[in-house]
Length: 271
Image 1 (cartoon, one colour):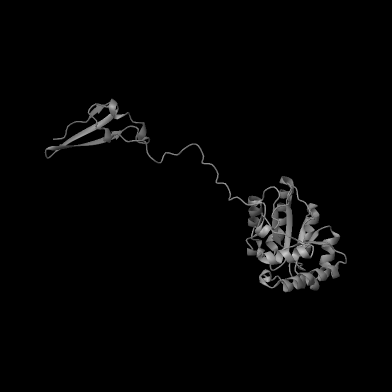
Image 2: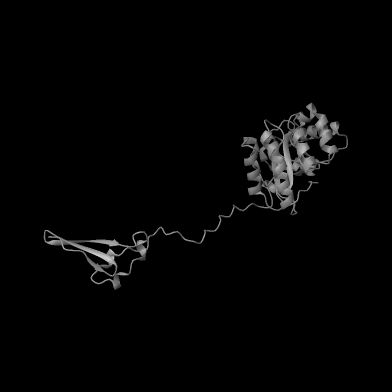
């Protein structure tokens, strides 16, 4: 018949004799924290394996170090310019001018007292020359972005590349005679040595970027601003868009994003 439980060192040890063999059940008054029970060595006649060990999932109070972002080089593909070379960051806008979105971007830049770089598509300059006039009048710098946003331009023969870039520059300077066009940016960042060589021969440096929030995916203003904040570092060149589709997210992100970048790094005009 069952025996009355015997108490040893605060542990209730119940021994039940059944069919000629004994089984033991361990119940501790520290069930909420079983690893606080006394070691087996201090409990008479208690097998070591019966004492719970420290549980493997006890939380470490020391937080794990944050994962470092993947390193980014100072130089872009094929030797293109990725950083400003100073602490200040630069903000660039591609694929315009656009009659709906470019004026709103310009309004935000003016309100923030920030100068940017506009990478212009030649065919759009032809349609909206007055916007180029405003861009230059308000102190922003200009960048050639090919005649028709040709992603494969860099793969074409050098004479064809040269014709495309020269045509775009002529259109820009027709809108603003004497305008300085110091930069060329290959659509999609699909750089080749040939397109860089031709741009250099026409007096333009190859302008890449360091921060890409993928605003062209239209993720919304909050996401765009957060991505820029997370990716930016001293000297970053930020890629944004004022043309090529619905840019309401970029326009919405601009005021807070510009204030944040200016406060943390400063924003300079590329030249």
